[in-house]
Amino acid sequence: MTTSFSFMTIDAAARRVSLDARDPAFYGDPNPVYAALHAHCPTFFWEEQKLWYVSGYDQVNALLRDRRFGRQILHVASREALGMAPPLPHLRHFDAAEAWSLLELEPPEHTRLRTLVNRAFVSRQIERLTPEITALANRLIDGFVKDGRVELLSAFADVLPVTMIARMIGIPDEMGPQLLKWSHAYVRMYMFGRTETDEHAADRAAAEFADYVRTVIAERRARPGDDLLTHMIHTEHKGQFLSEDELISTTIVLLNAGHEATVHQIGNAVRSILDSGLPVGPMFADGRATERTVEECLRISAPVHIFQRYALEEVELDGIRFRRGDKVALILAAANLDPKKFSDPLTFRPARDEGPNLSFGAGIHFCIGAPLARLELAIALPLLFKRLPKMRLAAKPAVKDVYHFHGLERLDLAW
Image 1 (cartoon, rainbow, N blue to C red):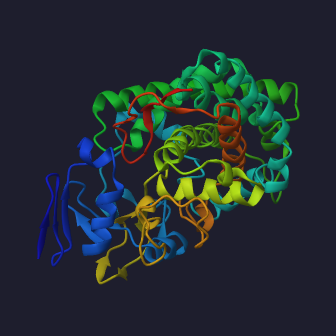
Image 2 (tube, one colour):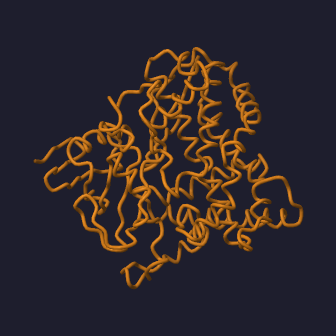
């Protein structure tokens, strides 16, 4: 049986899908596509990407925790053995910055790095930031509340998360705009349809980013502070300290991951709430209601849609045999819409309580910054709707062509 859409073809019997990820009809509103995949073939081979994809909630959740799959492969086999192409010379700075990224490592290195960083991101530590996040959010709203209109991403969503993660690490507020520029160039490496121009820009950003972090590390070695970078420099794990390269990779990944997705999620959440037409009051009536509203925003409009894994050994999954070194892609955002897990999954229901979404992943690579992101959303969203009670969309929001991230180009509001 073959199912066709104007921009997608599904061959359910063969479990093959043809879909142009650069088509605005898809990335502008991917949820109906995910619903069709659930209906016809939740595990499928995406022709254009030449890769198997998994979208079912139970399968994605299990794969995220399955130690037969990992983010890294060269720790168990060589490039030659796997038939992998050599590294690209024009990405040497990017590859160096990624070499010790928490997102790309497996145990034991991942365990050591994460242990050193994790204590700064546990919920009780993050909750202490509540007054600081609230003060910053109020100050940003003060800057545009009298104008009657705002482009929310540049005036608010871009600024709040990057400022907070920079402060946690020990980087001054005034570096925020530059951090955003580096991050935007850097993350294009993970988007579908990246070009060689994107690769050169990402490599330049990685080189400049690493050089800057190196200078901050030198300052913290000379003058320790009360910040995460100082903690990472001076804390040991089983007699070992982080090397300079590990410090640089870890700082870059924390800065990027610590704000990029939250920027998108603030915009996605405000849009989801306004589009729903539901009364806002009950959504933020108390802490529990706010928590459920935040989770529903994350479920229905996740900021990161796909994570990939390598098969670390020969393994069969849903009738498909993977060899060591083969990749499989997990669609987190589609798993959040699985009708076997969530009732009426394409409908925004802020009081929903049907189990956890997978927007932050699961297993050993569960997003280390999830407590910070959740707190920022739980403070920012109620505050925006409280201080701007007549807030409405001033123009139809355009979605960025940045799949597999999902965020708005701009969000024009009026009140």
